[in-house]
Length: 233
Ligand SMILES: C[S@@+](CC[C@H](N)C(=O)[O-])C[C@H]1O[C@@H](n2cnc3c(N)ncnc32)[C@H](O)[C@@H]1O
Image 1 (cartoon, rainbow, N blue to C red):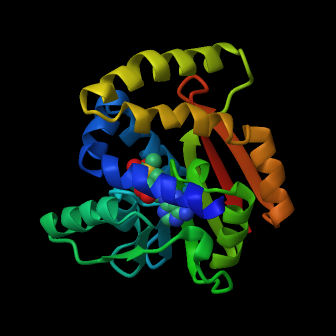
Image 2: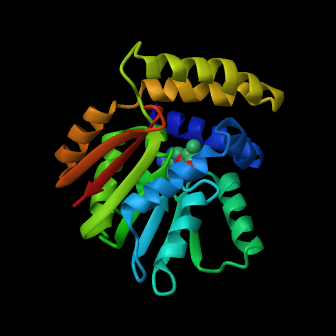
């Protein structure tokens, strides 16, 4: 069951990889860049720190973090889908950027007692893990003492709230029909299902506290459509 779900998610991202960046920008009207910048601003990475961008996809956050931790820090972008990670690698080559280390790994299978990162970031990844609590536990153990982590994802709003209705209308009547043009409607219909299974902000905070994070903050942005979770050990 677990491996079936992991493989399903991997298949989705491998399949959409070549259209991923274009559709992200189109479907968010470019706002995803603003939200990712907001996450990085809140995390405040600084020169000399070692960061990991988990579920890095095509590497947007890795590139943003690198600008902040250079010239003495490091960034590792990690994803388990080969095709999407290849796009991150190509983007690095095109930029002449040799400083990000790209690794193909499953987050839930990473060696968890390393305490190697000062910071970990993740955008639109936590919702895709088979088990959010397990993912946060891994991240807790991968972070050095006083390390911090930040997550950007869709906000799971209260059922039938205005934000919830708006999100459903947008996903069903904008995202799915547009992705259909690219023959990817099945893959993009998955977003609504994944939000439904994703804990609401307050629940995410409880899970993070339970895992051991001392500082736990959750805020919504963009009319409650997106959520940012900030954690500190
Ligand atoms: C929606 S994409 C987000 C990509 C990128 N972070 C962004 O914001 O554009 C989710 C990514 O998580 C990756 N992913 C999902 N489950 C994973 C896992 N268990 N281990 C590693 N990567 C995973 C997928 O392959 C995909 O690239």
